[in-house]
Image (cartoon, rainbow, N blue to C red; front, side):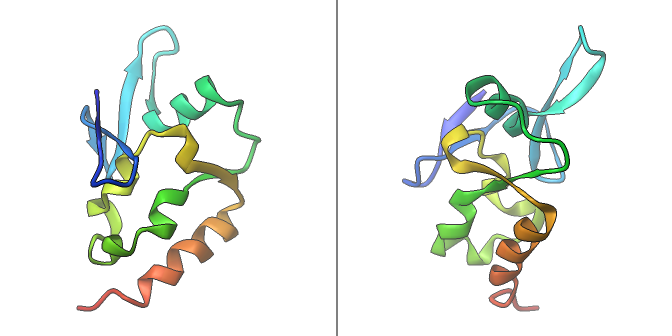
Length: 104
């Protein structure tokens, strides 16, 4: 359920999406999980309590300035190498750097 991105090495989730993020239902756990978080934990390690996963591919992609919020394709990226556990404050700060490029 993933497809490569625009030459950025991203693996974009092609399954169900909510608020821009890929997700799927895990019957054994009886819950919906975010695809990028599940794949990170499967491939790397558990995400420490209280941390968000920052999509580092978004932070370096100049073409993404016009894709903001739920329409940003980086929210669909499930490439575990493009994810970094950080505090909510750090994740917000990194995202806000791009907000100054958004126009009405």
